[in-house]
Amino acid sequence: MNPSEDVLNNIATALQLTEDERRHLHLLARPVEQSKLETSELSVALKRTIIALDPNPAFIMEKWWDLLFWNEAAELVFRLPSCSTNIQQGPNWLRRFLTDPELKSNTSDWENKAKIMIANFRTDYAFYSNDEHFKNLIEEFTQVSFLFRDTWPRHDVQVVTDCHKQWHDPRIGEMEFE
Figure 1: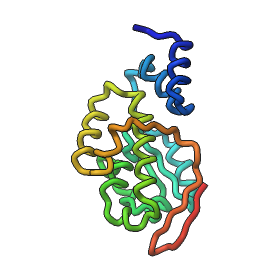
Figure 2: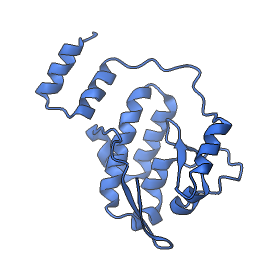
Figure 3: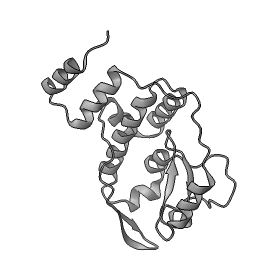
């Protein structure tokens, strides 16, 4: 079955979906065909841009939320491994947030922020719902995080729109980012 846009919009209206949820419904009904040539290779220019953003923390994250590249400020603020070392795979942003006890204790309103991140992750997952690596991550997060296990079945979705972040680090103090 291939429902029309009007049918999907009527369903969204009847269910009183938010705009993010409406977009998600459309995506689920008509998946976007992904390029078979997707790559995580970064250009030198993009890496230089991230480095040039120092002293502001900046990083690049790929579709599974693995960090591909970050600058020294991001290393300091987010306690990431040195980007100058040749690591095979960067840390996964959601895995770190869900499982790092230090992040839990140093993040005000950690649970609410984690739920928002899970909703963001579900939104991204909709683009790759047949991707085996995404499914493996979901299984892993379900095993290692009670909050993920409790939140994921709710099917909450949220597109990242607010880029204002407050962060506390006992070594640095209070920080705000836009």
